[in-house]
Image 1 (cartoon, helix red, strand yellow):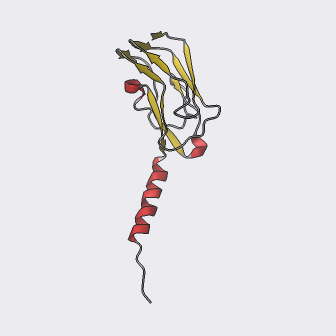
Image 2 (spheres, rainbow, N blue to C red):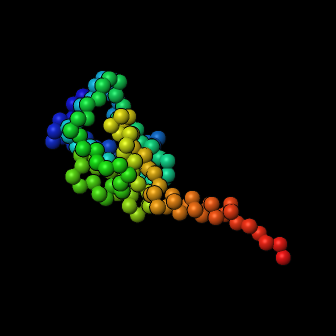
Image 3 (tube, rainbow, N blue to C red):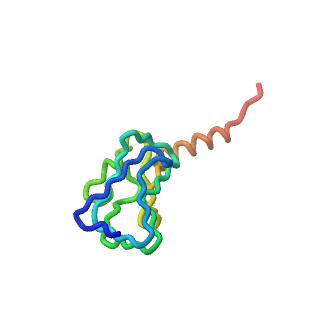
Length: 130
Protein backbone atom coordinates (compact mmCIF):
# COMPACT_ATOMS: atom_id res chain seq x y z
CA UNK A 1 0.00 0.00 0.00
CA UNK A 2 1.31 3.43 -0.89
CA UNK A 3 -0.17 6.54 0.67
CA UNK A 4 0.90 8.99 -2.03
CA UNK A 5 2.07 12.56 -1.54
CA UNK A 6 -0.92 14.86 -1.20
CA UNK A 7 -3.26 12.08 -0.05
CA UNK A 8 -5.08 12.19 3.31
CA UNK A 9 -5.74 9.03 5.31
CA UNK A 10 -8.27 9.58 8.11
CA UNK A 11 -8.73 7.63 11.33
CA UNK A 12 -11.37 8.17 14.01
CA UNK A 13 -10.62 7.09 17.57
CA UNK A 14 -12.84 6.74 20.63
CA UNK A 15 -11.38 3.96 22.78
CA UNK A 16 -8.45 1.67 22.01
CA UNK A 17 -10.90 -1.22 21.47
CA UNK A 18 -13.19 0.66 19.07
CA UNK A 19 -11.14 2.81 16.74
CA UNK A 20 -10.30 2.83 13.06
CA UNK A 21 -7.50 0.47 12.08
CA UNK A 22 -5.72 -0.25 8.80
CA UNK A 23 -4.30 -3.78 8.51
CA UNK A 24 -1.94 -4.40 5.61
CA UNK A 25 -0.59 -7.85 4.82
CA UNK A 26 2.36 -6.50 2.88
CA UNK A 27 4.48 -3.39 2.63
CA UNK A 28 3.51 0.21 3.38
CA UNK A 29 4.96 3.45 2.06
CA UNK A 30 3.62 6.75 3.30
CA UNK A 31 4.26 10.16 1.83
CA UNK A 32 0.77 11.56 2.38
CA UNK A 33 -0.93 13.02 5.44
CA UNK A 34 -2.54 11.04 8.25
CA UNK A 35 -5.31 12.77 10.20
CA UNK A 36 -6.67 11.31 13.43
CA UNK A 37 -9.92 12.68 14.84
CA UNK A 38 -11.71 11.79 18.05
CA UNK A 39 -15.34 12.82 18.05
CA UNK A 40 -16.16 10.89 21.25
CA UNK A 41 -12.59 10.47 22.49
CA UNK A 42 -11.75 11.09 26.17
CA UNK A 43 -7.99 10.82 26.83
CA UNK A 44 -6.80 8.61 29.68
CA UNK A 45 -3.24 7.78 30.73
CA UNK A 46 -1.96 4.62 29.13
CA UNK A 47 -4.33 4.47 26.17
CA UNK A 48 -2.57 3.06 23.12
CA UNK A 49 -4.15 3.23 19.69
CA UNK A 50 -2.91 0.83 17.01
CA UNK A 51 -3.76 2.69 13.82
CA UNK A 52 -1.78 0.77 11.21
CA UNK A 53 -0.27 -2.72 11.13
CA UNK A 54 1.73 -4.15 8.26
CA UNK A 55 3.12 -7.58 7.56
CA UNK A 56 5.99 -6.57 5.30
CA UNK A 57 8.37 -3.66 5.29
CA UNK A 58 7.59 -0.03 5.97
CA UNK A 59 8.99 3.06 4.32
CA UNK A 60 8.20 6.30 6.08
CA UNK A 61 11.22 8.08 4.60
CA UNK A 62 10.25 11.73 4.23
CA UNK A 63 7.11 11.33 6.40
CA UNK A 64 7.11 14.05 9.07
CA UNK A 65 5.51 12.42 12.12
CA UNK A 66 6.41 15.51 14.17
CA UNK A 67 7.86 15.95 17.62
CA UNK A 68 7.27 13.35 20.26
CA UNK A 69 5.10 14.21 23.28
CA UNK A 70 2.80 16.88 21.92
CA UNK A 71 -0.77 17.96 22.60
CA UNK A 72 -2.23 17.79 19.12
CA UNK A 73 -2.83 21.54 19.15
CA UNK A 74 0.66 21.95 17.76
CA UNK A 75 0.33 19.78 14.64
CA UNK A 76 1.00 22.55 12.10
CA UNK A 77 3.67 21.56 9.62
CA UNK A 78 3.55 17.84 10.39
CA UNK A 79 2.04 15.10 8.21
CA UNK A 80 0.50 13.42 11.27
CA UNK A 81 -2.38 15.33 12.88
CA UNK A 82 -3.81 14.22 16.23
CA UNK A 83 -6.80 15.36 18.31
CA UNK A 84 -6.10 18.31 20.60
CA UNK A 85 -5.77 17.03 24.18
CA UNK A 86 -4.07 20.14 25.62
CA UNK A 87 -6.82 20.80 28.18
CA UNK A 88 -6.53 17.27 29.62
CA UNK A 89 -2.96 17.67 30.87
CA UNK A 90 -1.86 14.69 28.78
CA UNK A 91 0.35 14.41 25.70
CA UNK A 92 0.53 12.19 22.63
CA UNK A 93 3.54 9.90 22.49
CA UNK A 94 4.21 9.32 18.78
CA UNK A 95 7.62 7.68 19.19
CA UNK A 96 6.31 4.24 18.16
CA UNK A 97 4.28 5.28 15.13
CA UNK A 98 7.00 4.75 12.51
CA UNK A 99 7.98 1.34 13.91
CA UNK A 100 4.61 -0.09 14.99
CA UNK A 101 1.81 2.21 13.76
CA UNK A 102 0.66 3.12 17.27
CA UNK A 103 0.32 6.24 19.43
CA UNK A 104 -0.20 6.52 23.19
CA UNK A 105 -1.54 8.98 25.74
CA UNK A 106 1.04 9.86 28.41
CA UNK A 107 1.08 12.30 31.35
CA UNK A 108 2.59 15.71 30.87
CA UNK A 109 6.10 15.56 32.40
CA UNK A 110 5.47 18.39 34.88
CA UNK A 111 2.33 16.68 36.21
CA UNK A 112 4.11 13.36 36.52
CA UNK A 113 6.90 15.08 38.44
CA UNK A 114 4.43 16.76 40.80
CA UNK A 115 2.71 13.42 41.39
CA UNK A 116 6.08 11.80 42.15
CA UNK A 117 7.03 14.47 44.69
CA UNK A 118 3.58 14.34 46.29
CA UNK A 119 3.86 10.59 46.77
CA UNK A 120 7.41 10.96 48.04
CA UNK A 121 6.27 13.52 50.62
CA UNK A 122 3.46 11.21 51.70
CA UNK A 123 5.87 8.31 52.26
CA UNK A 124 8.45 10.48 54.00
CA UNK A 125 5.94 12.04 56.38
CA UNK A 126 6.62 11.32 60.02
CA UNK A 127 4.15 11.42 62.83
CA UNK A 128 5.08 12.99 66.08
CA UNK A 129 3.87 11.41 69.26
CA UNK A 130 2.69 13.98 71.68
